[in-house]
Image (cartoon, rainbow, N blue to C red):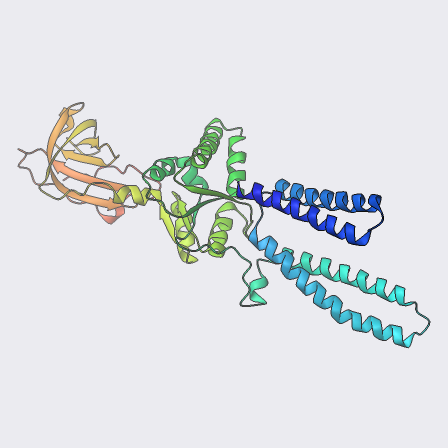
Amino acid sequence: MIHIVLRGLFILMSTTVGGLYAVRAFPQSGTGQLIAIFTALGISILIVAIDIATPAKKLSAISGVFLGLIVGMLSAYALSFLVDYVGTVATNVDQAKLEGTKVFLGVICIFVAISLILQTKDDFRFVIPYVELAKQIRGNRPLLLDTSAIIDGRIDEIAGTKILQGLVIIPRFVLNELQTISDSDDKLKRARGRRGLDIVGKLQSNTILDISIEDADAEGANVDQKLVALAQNLHAQVITTDYNLQKVANVRGVDVININQLADALRPVVLPGELMSVKIVKPGEANNQGVGFLEDGTMVVVENAKDRIGQDTPLTVTNSLQTPAGRMIFGRLPNDESPPAPSPSTQNTPTDDTPTPPAPASN
């Protein structure tokens, strides 16, 4: 609404100024006055149309244009002395030609300065330390979404809890990767890519989050490298489920929020001796072991519960183990007097590629 009023006032003021100029410049010519008024009106409407046609303006681009305009005008002003000196040496040079040369040099200088600054605006802050053309966001640090976090889908549910604060950025190259995956010949990859695009649509329609599509590219041979480089440029945090990306980002000093680690941190803490219940769904790898899962996916290994598959079984917690792949709980039946199973050794600790580790063998 403010933009509509501002544009209307601009057209009105431009036409009024044109009319006043026409009355003064053409006091005896009604035709000249009308031409001047309609010319001012047409130019103002054209400027408003250009403003409406380019809604996605960037402060860095606008700042680059104005800075280039100033630099170009200063350069043209300096070159004008050289042109005047040439005019004094060559006495047969027409003064009109000298003035035309100055204007032509001014146009060239302004164009070159604006083009140079727009093409190098990301690095220009190193030339002038106190001029920063890169986007700087005050308050909460922005969050960059990785492809894996979008496909995972839990980011949409996390956003619904209002725990995410600040700007959430989806880089254009991440969207391009999702588009490539959704066009894959592999049926599973195609389904994952389309799921990711659906999640992006849900995030954009979310009234809680401030979602931005970042068109700026970054250096890197692949999406992960570009994501880390862009996070460094924007001083942002990366949201992902990829442990390898997290390790690379940590090496380069970029903060990472891993959704898997966030989910593990929100799981309830159990202590040895606590009573709980779990449904045994399959036998364990060791003799008489039964394996069940809590609602959050935590794996529970129960001693001497192999014969209770399909039953809700009470148990007493004997030990718990936190691994990069998740949490494991070990327990035994409340009336079982046999010694608890030993804790898994480091060689049996699951890796990132084994999200549901096998139960340790009991002696």
